[in-house]
Length: 140
Image (cartoon, rainbow, N blue to C red):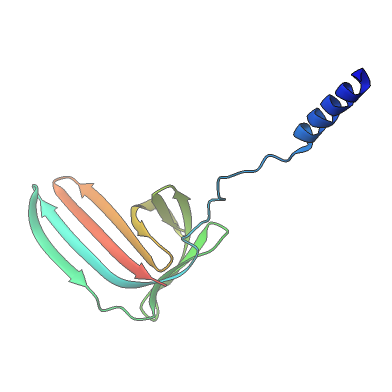
């Protein structure tokens, strides 16, 4: 009887130890990946905390886009002839874009929305008494 109890105990411990622990956390996916077409950009400028301009541009076609690749690089295009290479770092709700040919001036965006088909980036910059906010809406 003692051998049966020890055998059952041994099998129970072996079974418990051999079970693979499942990870209930889904793997985080980089939802920035792919080609995003610029649909709208809103620019608001302030001087001495007073709004000095506010306009929305919707004059974009398929030649205005950002394409994020899996290797931390991106390609941007603004019009037919203005294409550029970027490096990007995506952390949480922030993405930093750096032009390959000008790494001294990175652009820091807050991601306001990031769904399967819509990406909204927000930038807020201040220089002296001047401040500008830019909100860019992109679609796949």
